[in-house]
Length: 130
Image (cartoon, rainbow, N blue to C red; front, side):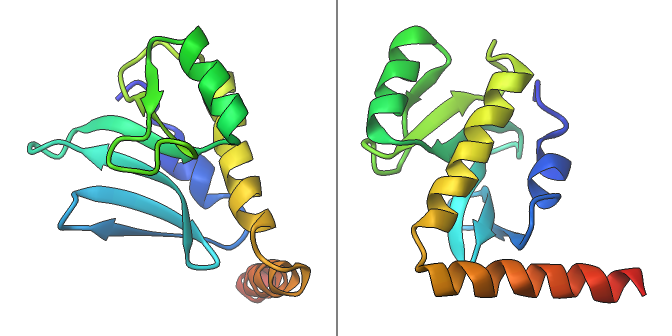
């Protein structure tokens, strides 16, 4: 995969968890129990797509501009987008999209739930630092 930094980058965000969905062979990244990104693995466990959420208009525009981004693979094609894991998307642009995906999913929670999620992440960070 062209983006070896992705796991560390996503896990550095507050309150992010990850799991493997074995039936799909996807490594999923969540905030508050909701997925905001995934690395889709092939039969040999090699990444072939990175799924992320964008506003529908932004996703459509990005798909028109970049050949290496398609409507979400096995996902809601209006909101989800798949980036080729070995494509030519610049790292900074992919990081921007991953940040947007994280923000969109976080903002989908109520303000109270957002605060709970972020406060629990801060408390966990504080307890690890002691």
